[in-house]
Image (cartoon, rainbow, N blue to C red; front, top):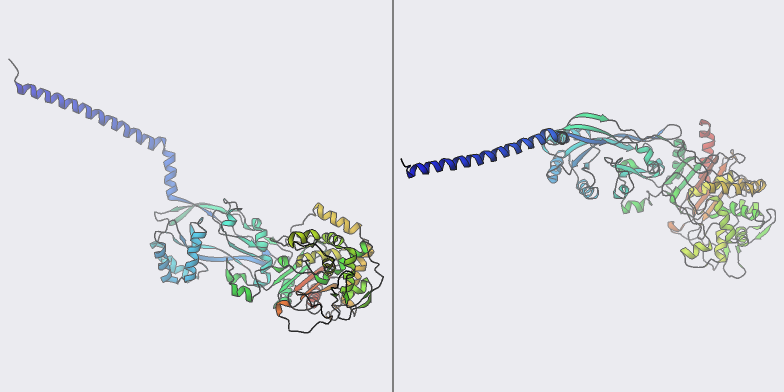
Length: 614
């Protein structure tokens, strides 16, 4: 019986269906195998990788900055400490709407326009930070108000940190320096791993010089966080290693006394132990209270002008002509080179003149000093005698000899940014002034004027060499450090001790003793207390040239900025010096009237009230 057309159609349909079903089954099988393989890959093969990613999303690594080392004076009195500080911070990577967050905070604790402006400036300038401080130094009430809205805003937080605190304010500002925000310039030299979450670094003074010691080593903690980035609990903590504490050579009682004597002036005073180079006191005025500026010291142009550059450390950066304070060294140079006989008298009239010039180099005393020998020329600070001596020595002998006393080079004190000063020479003048050296330049170099410039710390260093009769002590502020003398220093010391006779040193120190203790000495009448056998030398530095028409000095109303600088170097006791004091006061008058009495009061105060405690 023949099959009908319908039967064939039904059979073909079944075959087509079965064929399609088989194809679909194969596809489903392949997809199932692929899915199982992928699941196996994710769940078994890549388990460790994705488990780590999951933990990273749940656990946050935070580096914790260390406590900054405390700075003490030589008697364990705290000079720089840390106190608690609470700040409002915004994490700029987590915050969705920074402006909205700031407005919300402003409603709670009031944010000034200046603080908002500084925030945005930090946001652009310190882009390497996730969190930027909006307002710091919060009160407990302000902390509570910010915390009450913190849950509403991603990226908003209150952070506790340590604020640097200086108990003695202006008195120690220039010695200790300050800390400040890490900027792009700092990042070029910093160890980024160590300072990853650090915000502040020493900028000046001891804070900068000993930054590595004071900073310490950071710690870390793993904290559990929620979906909004809030910290829930600490999972693992490694404490940071605090920075090293420093004990300075400074005596805070002497430092306070020195500051009280200079307060109101512009200048510097340095007290140093010549035996070991320890700085007992170092004051630069004017100064400011760094605590009022928190981490960033910002002085306006007007304030800077009115306060005469209060951020400028005159002790190590102030450049002054040394004036007559270097006459003892010029005299020693003359003796060493057999240019003068210390006992030979020379007529010192009102001025000195070179044979080939009409220019008059005047003495400070209008009528001159008459007949003087070396000792009298130091005691009365006779300019004409030293004009003559400098002319006979010549600039080469003068410059080469001054190098043994650190002039023209850094002393090596443990402070950043120390200036070198200027030790003039023909080569220096050609390079810096473009003109040839003249005999007139040599003459005025002999009394510490002209191109010659020095810092107060260089004068203290040089004075300590005189007090030690040739032994060199490098100035230092860290009591625990003992600086080894470099080969170059040892060579200088060898020259000063072995090529200059002991009796020649004594001629100089005896004359300096009579400056203070003999009635015709320039510091005699200004030093009331003569108990401690002080030796010294006054200096008065002109800051403008006198006219050539007359030998008489006109009494005129000189503007403050053109008045003479007052200088003094001193040490005591004479036989075995324990303290050197150098004082420079700007635009005030003669060295005998201002710097000398202040310096000698400091010396007496130290020897009579402080020394016995060591």
